Length: 326
Image 1 (cartoon, helix red, strand yellow):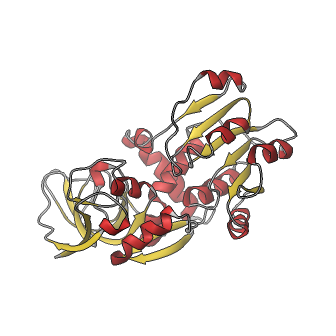
Image 2 (cartoon, rainbow, N blue to C red):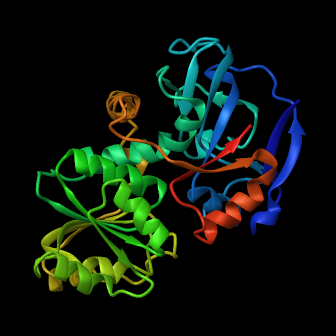
Image 3 (spheres, rainbow, N blue to C red):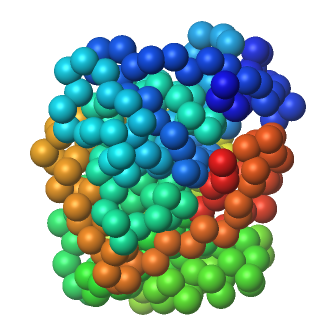
């Protein structure tokens, strides 16, 4: 019997329940996987609260790392004993478990130098950071980025990657502790949004020009500030909506604020091509395996404490990456 976290209704963290379930044998295109660690992502809260609708009852979580136990018919790129990691969306939902059946297609073989905990903490964040730094914009040394949630899991990876590429990062944070963490990972200037005007401070730091790119995972609360922080013809990248969705946006605003560009990317569209996915994975895993980029596992929770993990995510008590230990 496997231990799993399931929900029978949508709502707050209290709907997450620890249960036991039979795993069964892998069918065609599936593998049976024993997890070593499970990733926690803010997007998990959207499944739980109904923002991302799924049939109920439902498992929870889309990212984990572990060992292949059995493979089903037609599976050839992994075999029993392989160390793997995965991330996805609806197709991988159910990661909050110690053992499960999962489609084989999303599985990525894990380098020996990367532990299960590190992999669970970085696969989604790492692939996201990879497409941000290597696909979304043609960065060049000397460019400047405004990075919201700079002390978060993606933020800390992006900051380190930017430093490798000679890009200057201005990061927003809510506390001095988070500011110190962000600076230790490559953020050049931090802005505490709890008492500083972000757009005004950005203009001060850039001599009135504004930044080349904004990475904004916050959404509604920071949208206008982000636009106001860009240089003429700068790029606004909406990564998420932690503070809520952006409503009633008029595209004419982009022209009024300097012929700005706006994109709302999704990881799924950058890893849909297996070759591109492999290239992005190889690059981020290579940086981590050689120590050029470090992954901060700042919070570890037991599987049965998934509800508390969600509370901490939603109240922004976490820094770096969080995982469930199984």
